[in-house]
Image: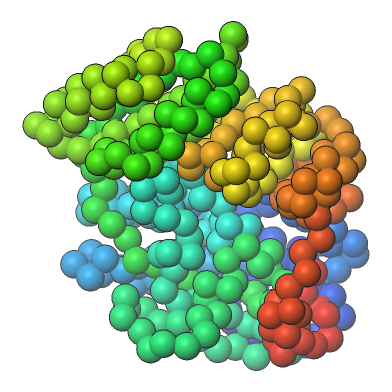
Length: 354
């Protein structure tokens, strides 16, 4: 079905009222999320684009949901600011799709994910009603914050047309280190030590490597303070965790892109409690994988989505397929959420949003 370009909230409201089932498109960067449209009318929101309000002194920005993440990052960088949740697929994803899929990158290790930085949104629900949730300032009234509920919703409750975030000043300098360990338990012990230490890392990822495991640590700061911090961190880790090797890595965008070098029929995100990492890794040991945010997220490349689905179900875990040709973007253990069902019944009682 040919997508219909939507240029205003009013057009989107009319579109929802005129169609029985509606699926939203931005730039189509997350291919697995669009496989389940199944003949639904396609709403193209890529024209709902641009920075609508930006107050650098207040550290807030309001943008159209169809705005490419790269445009948002460029506008913030001009003022020395950034989105601390570190959006993924930044070269082609839209900010609305990033929120809907809850796609944070490795740098969220320090400050948190999308839910920690979204302030408000304009949305249109399944009945075609347009309204605002949350606000445009950091301090808002207490109560149920629907804007945070939309994070990771995959557009099932309401369609976002405009989003407001709080932003932070970015660090001027970065240094990246690789620490090698012979076993996964050795590496996890090092991570446990880091989390309880005085060191505030910008990112902390790890991957299997030849003969063991590699822990990737990123530190950020000024040109004056960063070198001595790196030196203290290196000496402390050598003393406390005994890595087989510590080496400095060239700090590049690809180094901190968890999806880089992951190739397969499907790319899958799995949220993990730290205690399940050893058991989980045993189940996926034959897959290409990377762990982000100190191990709280696993990124997997698989040619056997069915097999991964079975493994996740046995572990009581859920996965989100981002890229690839899959029957369902959601795999693993079913999500039974009474609150989500109640919100769906209020905002989309006819089940139009798919």
